[in-house]
Amino acid sequence: MSQISDLVASKLRDIPDFPKPGVLFKDFTPLIADGPALGELVRDIARRYEGHIDVVVGIEARGFILGAAVAYELGLGMVPVRKAGKLPGETLKESYALEYGTAEIEVHTDAFEPGQRVLVLDDVLATGGTAEACAQLVERAGAKVTAIEVVLELAFLEGRKRLADRPVNAILTL
Image (cartoon, rainbow, N blue to C red):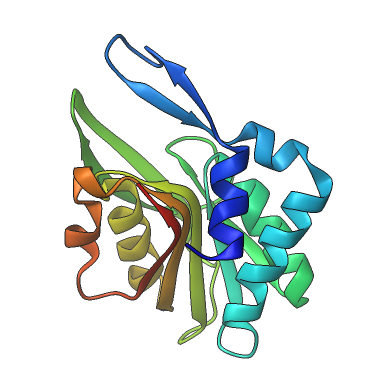
């Protein structure tokens, strides 16, 4: 493991039976509550993409935290991708499957300039449904997904398979 992945691992905590019985939730909040650790994480991500992207996308909700911080570090803008019904303007929607049904995410139709290079940023890659839907939204809006970056990948859920044609980086893989 790298120094940054060791740092991430040391700051995650397990919450059993959340959000439902049998699930072991990987809680990200201790990492973002630690200012020096958060700063190190943000700088690590920013270094990887400096000069290679034009805008950062943060996926609701924890992706907003990282997305805004990385965008700020790079002097770029951040575009939120939100749950359906949360954005005030004209939007594009994308549906994706959950284990118990479906969900929708949205982005403003005018969020990107044609051809902009986009970093999609989120905290966890699990089944890949949200990240895949987000990438499809970005591309439908006329931009290009340069990479998908996550702090934690739950490899046993095989979410990366859904993103096989897009570059994916996970800082820590469990």
